[in-house]
Length: 216
Image (tube, rainbow, N blue to C red; front, side):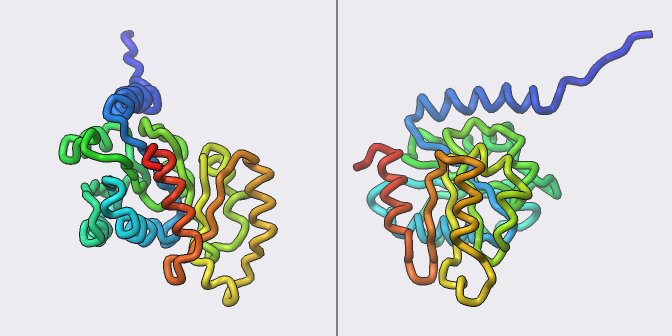
C-alpha cells in the first residue's frame, strides 16, 4: 500500500511567509499584522492613521474580511491604498493570500503596510504572514478577560492598541487590571490607550509608526 501524506498546512504557509518576509525586507516596508476580535475598531484605527499620516508616510492596507469590501472602501476614502481579500468564510489570512494581494499593491511603493486580519483572536495568531510585527487591538467594550483567555496573540504581539477609551465610563472595564495582565503575559509590550472619537493616544501611535519606518 502506498500512503501519501499531505504536507502540513502550517509548514507550507511558513514557507510562503518566508518569501513574504524577504520581499518586505527588500522593499524596506514595515509590515504589521493587525489582529483583534470583530468590532474592536481596527478599520477606524486605519482610517484615523491614514488621515493623520497623509503626506508623511505612504500607507497601504491589505484588508481581510469574510465576505464584504466595506472596510477597504472606508480605508481608501481616508487616503490609504487598500486591497481587499475576501476569505469566503476562512477565519484568518494566509501568507499566500497576502502575497497575491501584494501583486496589486507593490510593497516597495509603501512605508508601512498594515495587514488587517479577519476579526478573530485565535486562528490569525497561528499563521505567520511574514510580517515584521503583530499588533493586537483590544476595545474596552470587550471586557478585560481577552488577554487571559487568548494569551497567544498578546504573547506574540509587539504592541497592543486599547481602543474606545471614551467608552470607559459606560463599561465595567478595569483598565489597571487589564494593563497588569497584559504586562504579566508580555512585559515587552508597547501599549497605546486610544480613542478614535477624542483623539486620545493617536499622536503617540502615529509617532511610533514613524519611528518604525525611520521617518523621524
